[in-house]
Length: 379
Image (tube, rainbow, N blue to C red; front, top):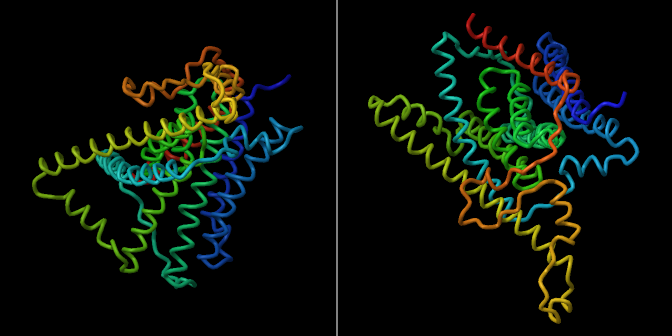
């Protein structure tokens, strides 16, 4: 019996999550203890990110869905074949900076809630080994393993394979599922909440820009700032006291003023996020419409005719219509970027219980491991 695309996408994700979990368990039992700790960290990250989260799903997606046409169609389906301009890149870096502050707020809030139930974050015990790399090299390695690789690999799996692979069940559901699984794949109660919310932002940006590259930039920027500030604190670089200043502010004696300041700051961040996402939508949409116009008429045609442009006949617009893309260019009346960007889908596929089998399996696996980290913090 031929399986649906939804079934295959869930199966691909479950295989990746299961292997990730098994490798993590193996690592906790000393699978790589024969290597120097610095080398072991690099090898572990490379296997996880490049092998399990990038190469494996890309290969399985091609095998299950594009066995005859190969990687070209896989790149198209996962939005790896698109291009973005300089303005989109700048906006994406701005969104990544804002996402970093949102993450701080979310993690602080939920860590406070967890601590109310008696949870305390397990403290990692230092082995006291001497790093085999100088400070600058350690920073570059951490930047690669914590920021660059996750931005590329994790975005490909969640926004490329999962989000785009599930569009036929409805964009809103695809955003929710891809974001939830992004949070669960961290296998950590401390990271689950902010990773899920950050996943929603990056999923929305992917829908808005019709490319996963802006999401990669946001992911990289958020993680890179964290890596730099941690390195600055350890090596005495510029910004070394950022977290100390932040903690001192949050622990101010005047709790009411602290709350008001945090609330006002978060409101400002949310407003900026909405503005940048709407700006991203305008740029992406207008660029595509301009390509439609340019593809229909040559310079001579435009110079010699006053006839209206029949956009419906354009191949590019036809592609937009096939993807159920909303094209509302009246930005003055735009209430929310979400209202304008999200497609108005008519023929939404309703997954069967069989289709959802591996989604349920992934949720159970990720949920159990995440719940275990919570219980571990209670002991």
